[in-house]
Image (cartoon, rainbow, N blue to C red):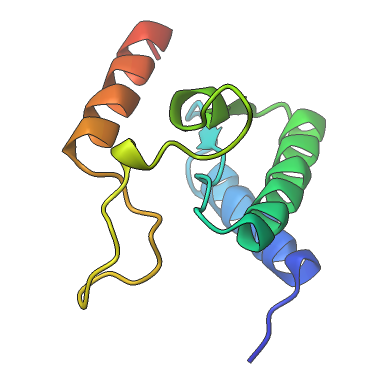
Length: 112
């Protein structure tokens, strides 16, 4: 089944609202969706990230932007931070040990 970005965006909003209702005193941070190796998929990811950003801004929730961590200067994803496709993982969007370390240092720097 094909899922639209609008439908996915609404699902993301529902998850955030659920967390806000369940944990009203929690400080919620949302991490943008990580880049994909495929440009067509990145266009969708960028659209979803824009929707997430806009929703979170309107709801007073901080979005943690990570595009600068995992993309090269000219916008293409830096594959050295991602697990390469295999028979176990085919979507090419999971961080490897270097990516997790880089992301962890970013979070520590933010001192959340």
